[in-house]
Length: 338
Image 1 (cartoon, rainbow, N blue to C red):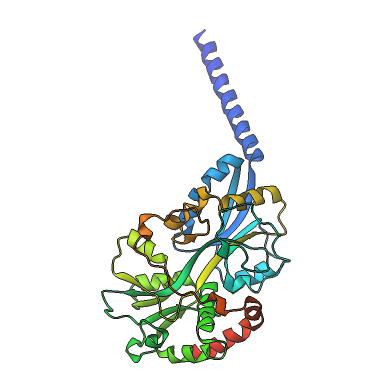
Image 2 (spheres, rainbow, N blue to C red):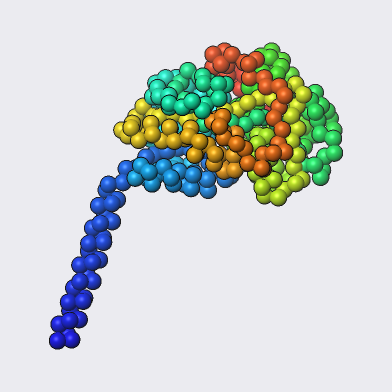
């Protein structure tokens, strides 16, 4: 009798395992999956999976993230036919200006919370998600009086003390180039880069590499994002300060769009809606250390001591003109700094 009872228990256990395994497989089949490309920054990999957990639960889906470096290879993939994905995020104006309407679907999320300045940024169906301002970051334990102007940055006392990202290879470096064109004009920006050539310690292929070298004390000054100071303060690094140059700053806006190749259009639209929602946008400042485009979001305390620039120079640039001239500007920049 005991033996029969034992067999029954064993059989029930096996049936339970089979049922659970089948249920898992069924659940896996039922889950909708969305492929999303995002920038591969220092902290991005930690942010995205947690930030979209609410969306996944609500839509009963799974977001598969592909972390990529926003460089020229990525840009060519976006413009070509090889990239298979549903949504692409993190394209700033330096790259969006040379894309066209054949890459992304024309979809505008229904939101009344988008600040007016972000309602129309490009002609390529991208939607603004977050932004920051370009500025000079410097180590205040090594520099007492940082350059306050572009002219001051040209001073010979700063030889080998500045880290920049390449305008030739990455989108952030290209934003710095556009900043210089907006400041000095299309005929004068080359003189600026030539004048600081000796002050440049290194030119990195990516913005994340530049930031890491700055943190590692390779050089005490960096052309970077003002909002990244929030990350440093959160980490307890009080030896980094921010300097907006008197001529003006440049607003770099990171955008996202739905690929024309997607076969999950409805879910992709819902995801873009979610990215502009107050629920998601509230997570951006302390997660990506950027400013949200949703005007209803209150910034956390780590942003309280971070100033915004008094003057923004973006209006000095015509995006259509930038699209036409960017290759020439990059070529001229390369000759001046290398």
